[in-house]
Image (cartoon, rainbow, N blue to C red; front, side):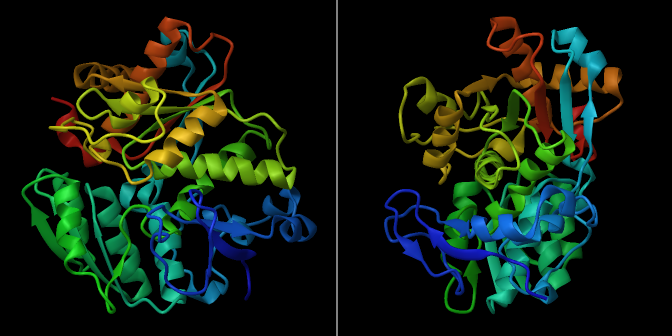
Length: 388
């Protein structure tokens, strides 16, 4: 069954177009590539009412995803995570309309399953048989699991300090696992030495389809709110693919006419121990400088030099958003307070967004009447040491 209205890949930096029907990494200018679709054709064949009749997973948006033949889809039921009101904690911090989108309920326990499901499915469709990537833990676990589901080989490199459960997920899925005494950049250098004609590099934003899976969070948010958008979305930002993807998704929905012209203000949340995007945004820069001596308990956002820095900053500037850095002590306190108020154990990265919301409300950047969505990008169960 043919599903996708994918037309080509486009470089957001130099504007060059690239063929979509062969494996692609970066543009020759060094920028990530973005998938583009025939949105006029999509508008003619599908509408929100059609989407509502489909199964509750991310493939309900199949016309806006890159897999052309549904026979190549590798799925474990990912997507359509709950959007939960957090009125008790919200009232505590002056945001009674606070909502949390809980990505901890997807397969592998983090939002990374979205990118892996679409990225692996498209890789298989394009004839790739072996994928390789560096990871801070959850992405590697997800790609290992979905590669196994699709019958592909996977090679994963991760720092020794990554959450132990993510190593075990890779082992269970049969991946070739390399542990690196360093950060994700060190893991990336190891992978760079392995890729070649038989091994395809699926590092963050070095292939274009992980982003397409993660953008479905944006589609879901709009649909769950009745095809409208909230005032603000806070996103924990390391590599930034989720934030970039949500921005891309909402732009596509606006062009389709499925939402109005208004877009939410996007907020990139980082740690004071690793805040390259915050530093760049504060300086009004277009590129981020590598962050020295990066460290935080929110391990998933320990990305000192994100490849997608331009796209992250573009999304913040375009939506009137901001970037904020959070202290580890504060995010761990908010993780505990939110659990006591709402009964949900967030991952440290999601808890950082709570702290950011609290700080932005206290500063007046957020107002009491605004509808604010926090993305909890994974289950706290994968981080047992986050609670003493």
